[in-house]
Image (cartoon, rainbow, N blue to C red):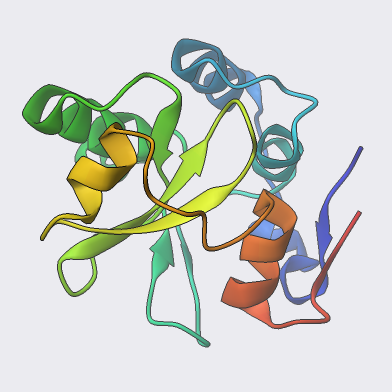
Length: 145
């Protein structure tokens, strides 16, 4: 499977070296053949969304504190989230978008109760797949398999 985002099909968005991101995906427990794995093996982040205001973090960034790994480690240690959840975006308005490794669903999580609902498995996903989440970020027709 290969996810293609038409607005990112410029050479400047392609990942030049996949070794670091492959290792980062492995540390997070994400398989390379998942939707999110195929996306990050192709595209280099972080990526700003003109449609939403969110910044989609990179798995391992030039600034480690601004990466999926670092943000995920922070919420896991501070809020006790299970390992199946990883933070996808920068914090915006007291919330983040979160990916579920086991289902590939994406959640819109606020830190005024939504974090506890997520941890307890009671929060409903906002997007049924990572692909649908990308369509939200980059425009409905932009992302395809």
